[in-house]
Image (cartoon, rainbow, N blue to C red; front, side, top):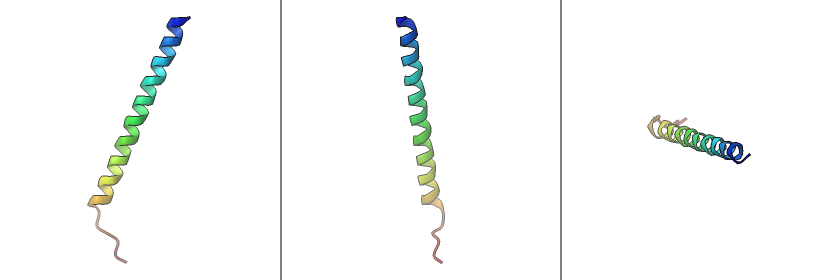
Length: 42
């Protein structure tokens, strides 16, 4: 019983960590895109 619960908690923790890293990566990529593109001066 405890092994299953610990396994589920571990999987949820790893999933949360991966989701956080992907979001940070996407945010940083968007920031770089905004910083390196020419401004729209229309």
